[in-house]
Length: 78
Image 1 (cartoon, helix red, strand yellow):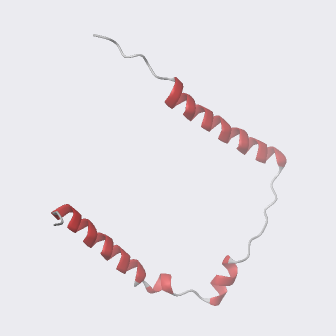
Image 2 (cartoon, helix red, strand yellow):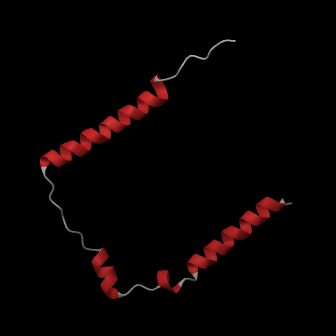
Image 3 (cartoon, one colour):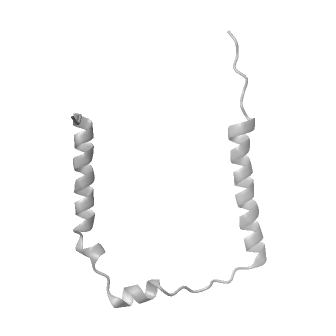
């Protein structure tokens, strides 16, 4: 038998599912909108910008690894 929190969660999930499925704004898409989403433009970016973004991402990844793996403090024994 389902408990009260599980039953409530199922009802909320079904309500959200039917609410999204029944929304006419998401169901309708004009031809103009569908044509726009199928076409992408290439945006040229300079090499220094690409290098800067890459180095910044690597620095953030390194900082995160340091924070979670190497900056552990030793627990004090009391």
